[in-house]
Image 1 (cartoon, rainbow, N blue to C red):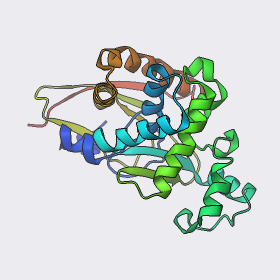
Image 2 (spheres, one colour):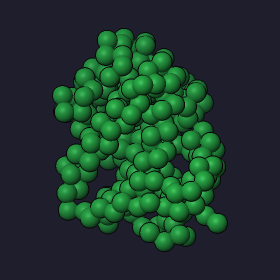
Image 3 (cartoon, rainbow, N blue to C red):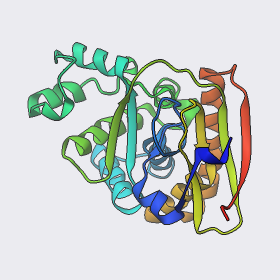
Image 4 (cartoon, one colour):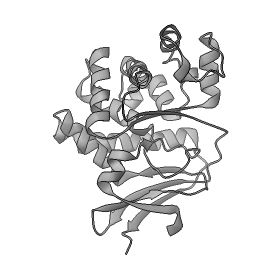
Length: 251
């Protein structure tokens, strides 16, 4: 990866202002990423430390992520979004921000249907709850809770629908950033790749586990999620080469 594919930011600014998007290569602009984005990270932690959480508790836990860690990011793709809208009796060209309360409830009623989930990692979570260590009811409740927060215009709750087909050329992992810890590279390039920034991903685990009062669990849950992210890539794109990089700090 060339140096002009990287944008350097202070670590605090990156975590607090830039959404941790999904690894999906169709994502545009400056980004750091993890499988399923920050939404999947939050749900993985919630499921493991709050296995009996109610819907209200799950929504509150997701809100706390957006308030105290960083942007809560969830995505779909345009095809899944259109199907979701059509099957909910809503015109597929209608902007989601224009939905009234009744239409919002129509959407939420089927938000957790596999065909309506355009994120491959979250869809695998739904379809394989034992493998992904997140009970199906928690993933389903989490998706509905996310949209309730988003419909309410909750600050730092971010949703997008990605356009087009997958055209990734490789899976690229930043494993470490050598040198000073005050700044970190984010990716900004035209080439479509699956991308994961593991040091910043680990920071999200550390911060959210601290907020939930389970700081000692962060390392274990981070390694679990890494394993499951690898499974997602193997399932969805087994043909792609993988690159693991240690990046030096900009002089």
